[in-house]
Image 1 (cartoon, rainbow, N blue to C red):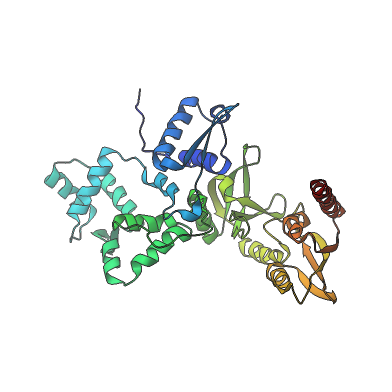
Image 2 (tube, one colour):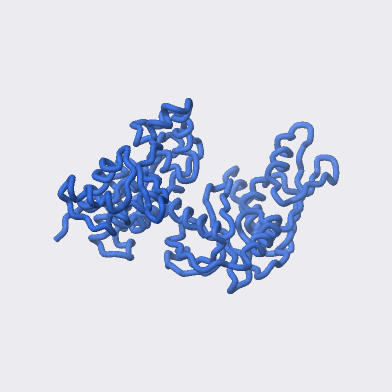
Length: 413
């Protein structure tokens, strides 16, 4: 029976479990039905060893709930980066790595000479194909450089190191510290800091969406597919946790300024429409062939964005008109200029028109009127009237306002 190890071979499996702990949370052991109980216990132990004190346990009537709790605005290093530093290696991988670094130090050699040096200097028998594969892997990583000399590939160590950049460029360390906690693929910046023995001791982010790092591997695949203008199949988890596959053309990455969530926008030929998929719900991405209509779809999306209040394209097919929404707001121009400024700043695809003293009309034509309602409700108390081509939405808005009025009236009594 194999023993427990903190190291992993397949990051996707660990990503799934950490995503469940962090994004969904508040689950008990018997609710993780995808794998056996032992697999769950091993993954939980691994995650706990990486994440330490931010793991939280709560005893409930359903059992012990496990979740991750952290104040993301008060951390100087994303704790979820730890999962990336836990990949397992074989003994041969480790030996070959350090031997190659030693042999190529200041040298330029072809595959045959490198293999001979490994065998003669270290008494290690590596076949030439194994060495070639490792060299190609390191060329992709940027650790080793490759140049053509006749028909042969000549390999040498890259002179680019974290230490050389930090010493050569003033302020480079501060730039990497900022990047490590504030951007996509921040784990790259964190890796550079670790290589140089540094830590981020300067920057904190008020809205630090640390969970994004679990999506970065999916994001990178999508960006490659978009760059090559390909079709793709994504495996996506729905609200019930059931996985399904969707074939489409990835075109853009949207990021919500309200929630911080990131979405992959795809054109789905089967339904002749655009759709948005949350990155944290995407399990995997598989590239397909080149899409000859890619530029046409991208241009259509650019036009459609003008009618997107957020990331939703509604329940339509093709390029339908969606719906319209209109509301009249009471805003005192003399004392409530800040409200008017906010309306102008957040109106997105809508238009604002003054219709009378202290009365302003906001109108918008959007694909999904319902998506606007959370924002619209922040103006409750100033809404004079509201109407929409989607009568169900405005009826619900008025019912919600009436319900709030009844609740507050009871509290006053």
